[in-house]
Picture 1 (spheres, helix red, strand yellow):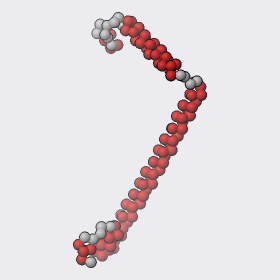
Picture 2 (tube, rainbow, N blue to C red):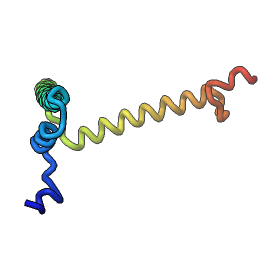
Picture 3 (cartoon, rainbow, N blue to C red):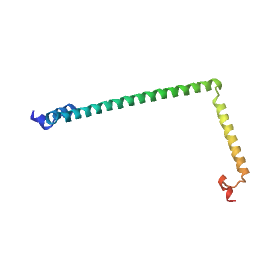
Length: 121
């Protein structure tokens, strides 16, 4: 017993017990109400968070599903290319881009200029 008195367990119930022994009943009631409201608030918060998580999960699943559908559609339309064909395609686009860039540079007169320096001429 005396050991209990030295370090009492700190729980809500224990607090209430102490309050009931010590204080005015109105104060006890207020304290009880505060504890109850806090508990309700925590429960509501947890519930809301759970709902949010569930919604997020559903949305993620929908997004993944949609992406899969799109990919499937694309695969249906475009016949499977060999690696060589793909490499050639990439080379072609690169080559075209380089040609366009070189043409642009030639048009600009090979000076190392940006588009914003036209006002300084």
